[in-house]
Image (cartoon, rainbow, N blue to C red; front, side, top):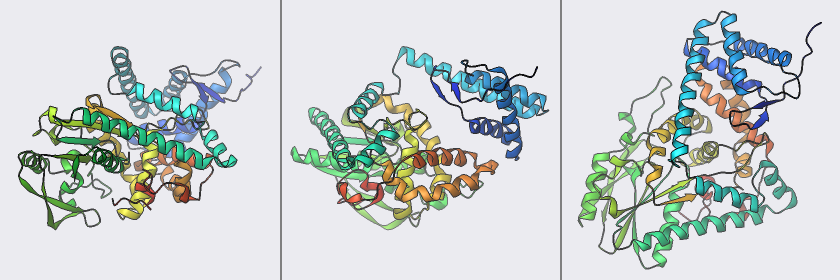
Length: 450
């Protein structure tokens, strides 16, 4: 008597969470391993994934649910039985490496909070629950019920309070601090945060001088290109670290420097420079993607620096009950901004994002434990706005990258973001958003100059 098939609808993750089953994740895992050994046939990955699902349907009897580990075991089995030994070996290696990484993370979390701001994340989640914006469904409810403008006001007040708290900490160390470093990953809101911290400190009687380290990029022509002709200017070494440190030391010594100007549209420093001098009653503000990177400010003693970190600590669940990734929110922000401010179209931003993530993991996250204050730059109302600007691009992204073995990072990311935006209602009226709001750094219409 043949076994009865039972459709697989749920799966148990390693942490015990039950989430919707997604065959596409199996396809992506197989195809990624195949690409590593020269494979380019995504259809074959889909056929093998169908076999894995078929085995699950035959072997799992309700109410039992398959686990991630069981699925991975079946992937190995199907690859080997189908004669794809090299792909199977690559998949096994991937699996082993990820297990080791998880073990290391678990050990670190057991002994220390490490570089994960658990307390701050809990505060953000608690606020999101209290303000009924902790899921895509809840945000859609705000739009349906007409309470979206009230959500904008509440988020704005929360962010402003966070800024004020940071300013108070800086003032508490006013006798020592000469430089305030505002750091964070790409499109986390560093520039707006820098301006707003400056405004608060000015109200307290302190004169501020802003020094944007983006002006210290080397000319783009000196950067190496990858196989797609893309530049990697996300690494700290893309900046003139030697000149930055010399200028910082000179400023603290009371000397006048000639700060360069960098033009992102031409990819070159301009001929003109801007003179700058730091007086004794002034504090220098640094807005930099890599402000926490040690060699960036090694010429300045630690006691003279106040390190502030901003991240989009988004605590919103998608339709599957999983938290939306912070990096996906920042990707959308950068897509909007790059399209009107830096002459990049959204496709270029998406294709470049793997550089952004690699640099964040290497040069930002490891230093998070050294900061003096963390600001949450997430805006629970922002995703419906980005849907208006960007959603029409994503069907083509998903279609174009799906079969391209060299663009699987872009495909997986595009599909994930497409699903998020597809599940959200759109918000059209940007007039309800304050002109000094952080989101204006990306959508435009700000009272600030960026």
